Length: 308
Image (cartoon, rainbow, N blue to C red; front, side, top):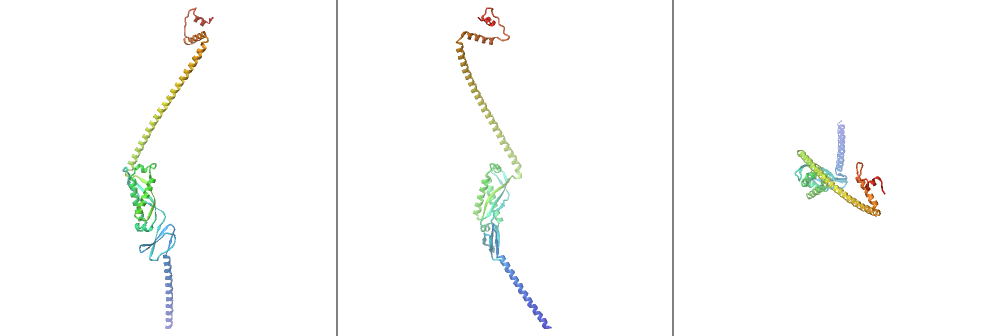
């Protein structure tokens, strides 16, 4: 009986040792799998993989593919290589003509050197904060050189050139301080008035537009009067020329007619005298004319048709 019990305990101990060995082997396999998995880094297109060891950067993977690190010692973080949009916090500025405005900007930027970016800005949020400070400083300086109307007037505004200048200066500041980032574009997306002086500025704008409209009307009336005077003068000149030409033509015609009359009447003076007498009748005699003539007057004979 004692031997049976001893034999059972011996068998049980062998089973325990066997299971223990199997468990240890399983744990080793799991540990090896976890170690292998944790040592693999998958770098995707459009991102940086930053490998740190005890907080220090030891490697930056810039190309896509499978990469490796020391498991449980090194850790990996990801930074984007793509262009990012940073919405700059809106702030108030003062224009050259002492108008207050609220300016809202955005910037398109990307990480050019992740190691320098981490060394000087630490994080993406830190890089955007420094970039936002530079943008606001430059925007405030540049718009402070412009009048309010020049900024809001789209036809006269030089925002395109201004945006390029702001972008260039921001990149100069970022390169100077080695932030490892580059700004592709800075744009003013909104420019508003503070509520406190919005109504006053709008009223001033209405007044200015009314002055401009009145100036246009005055200039239009002046041009109208000038054009009308010029046209009237040209018409009078044309009429004077036409009258002079008509008088000249009439005079020439009368001269030619007189020459023809003289030539014709010189051939028969008696007929000419008769013709002139008959013309005088048209002038001196009408339906109410009374003429008293002697019986033996030649004029009476002519009227009565007695012509010898």
